[in-house]
Image (cartoon, rainbow, N blue to C red):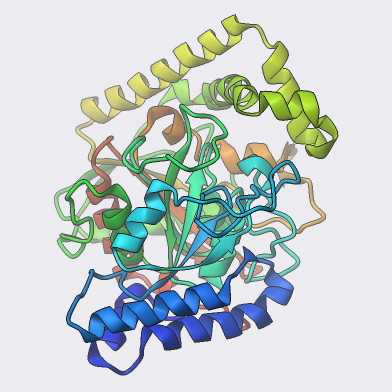
Length: 451
């Protein structure tokens, strides 16, 4: 599968058609997904009909923009008319829904083709997304909860996959699968028609083969009149960013530490100035995040917990039960802590005149499927903690944060660089990621086996 830019150029030159792109996807998905399990539903006749319509419009001179004729994977918590929304759970019906989520309506208006539904961790509540595999090593996890979209993009099945991000569920699979993943500013992309997990933390956004692909997707999804691809080539000379390496960003695996420090050097070589910063309040990230999620998730799934508890994975059921019994004062304290964390981030950015904060996306690469913990020296840490502690700060603050590939560990597994800017400055996050991407080769690497 080509990038959006490559496919768009080929479509408009007449060297390829949307029908050919769709047909190629259907054929490759049928073969590749026997091992990857990145998609849970593909309606080939519907997709081919959409492709025929896209070709007809292009032939008639109606060009809807960069996504016209481009197949997009959609996380299976997002309503797509004609598809069931299952959320990776037996709780949800197999009957197709009647209406598109707002983001799907916007993608269709931009001419995108809905390739199918990608796998989600059950109830979008987890970091593994079983049984999906990581294309770089199918014995390893793809991350979650948007693991299907991450694997599909990394394997070249689609250039864009939609995901959701409550504590890192776009950026986690992006980093582990070697794609770009953008969590936009909270509220920029509407969640109408999307099954919630934690309403005050849920974000929707794209995973893409490149930064530009994510920018094209955000332009369609946000529909605020901003062309988020504009200015990607402006460079970053004169910008100032803070480097985060203290807890919760430490400890990290040595290969990630090395790749991250080299990435910072690249950013400074491109003309940006770096400052080491410390935000002590971020040590309370997990306490705040998991003081909010259980109560909000319980409110979303109250009826299911009461009527069909055995149809919920035990670990998720425990979280929902906790949400039912945790005193409301805990939620209020977590919400207050969230506000303090957001203020602390803003204060540091103001005091140091920062345009962005930069960190490793994750402290560890993709774990083997049989592994339940990461080890950092003498410290053992469960996967959820490892894969959330570095991403969740920006769910709590609502800032945009993007993960862009920045290297591989000695086992050949991808590493991600995280760039977070101020709320509403999504375009700047994309611009910084694009500058880094264009000066390195990491995003251009493809899985030999799948890509």
